[in-house]
Image (cartoon, rainbow, N blue to C red):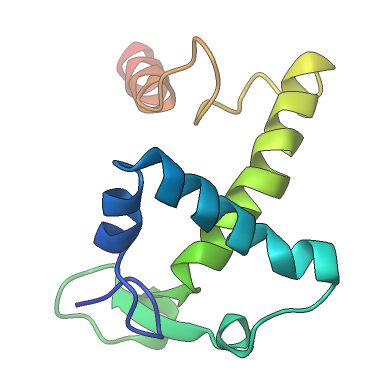
Length: 122
């Protein structure tokens, strides 16, 4: 099982992190498309997978669509866009208080606990 359409596996990238020189080489190679202004052909492929929200229920409105991107493309987007965007939002207090996931001093379970406590009080 691979985490990319091309057959590359996240285990390959995790193994690279153990060797600092190889990790630096991989980071440079991953940045070449951004510097040169092109996208490799394998970055153009996306696999859409539909997962059942309710096991055994095949109703189309109860299916969740997940897009699988190339793992190195997905990782580079996370580093270049998502990280800098989330830091910018936090630095300028632009993230709403109701946003809990992946924020400092906010737990992802907090909204569930808040909702449960609100229902218990009501």
